[in-house]
Length: 333
Image 1 (cartoon, rainbow, N blue to C red):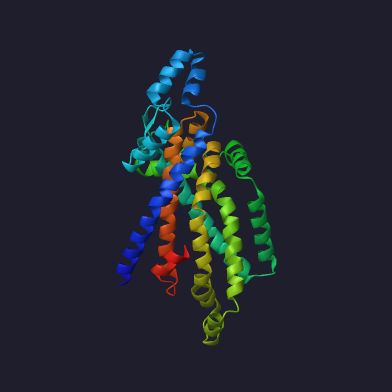
Image 2 (spheres, rainbow, N blue to C red; image 1 turned 90 degrees about the horizontal axis):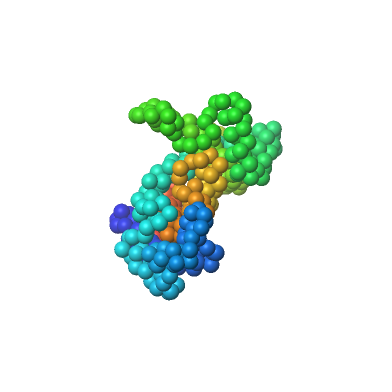
């Protein structure tokens, strides 16, 4: 029965995704059309010079000479057939280009989210258990500093300290190309290259999750079920972990799901600073090259990724809290 309800919920949410995707596609297309220049201007600038006739021929071959409404219709038709178009700047299909960069971004986001969640929950619980004592003050000060530091500045300082001065970690890239590692050695190399960008990306979210867990734990300290557990003789560790923390994770799960979009936008800065070959850096390069086909594809797939994650968050929310049904979580979102 519960499985049937879950499948019905998924069908309902997937049907809701369709108008959201169409709306996002329209908004992205209109906004990018307002930007000055196009890929032909960039190609002409790189060539040093180009005659008006040559530029007109390039625009005609790229379909940029057509009316705006016709370009929009063609773009929506491509989306309907799961065709993201062609990147004339990179000279390859947009979908293939995105798929080649997507794994790197997913690795970076997964590591950053794992670091932020694990340390955020641990520090939040520590701060709540030792409230108004020196651990609480130390954690509060650290989260305030982490929350206020700009991500790009933190990344540059991390490179200066851990790479240039101490020589502990690589300063950029995803792998050591000259080493040509394979197997476990390659995984270790990727992990070493990912430590600095993942920690840099996780710092802001670590501060947010720490404060969120601390606040939730303090609010639940006087709840009826917590007092009942203590009255039945449950140990303080069991009360904190099993009873209080499980309920404190509910707002954290919701917040983490909604912050996937900001995590993607933060990856643009981090990937640019650390030369990480992911979607963020690719999006930055496509903006500089005025490669709007590629940028539209990145924005669309990023929006789909955020939508899918939010659906999974609703399912996880219902799994953590038995009082919340899957059908109810759909209405909550």
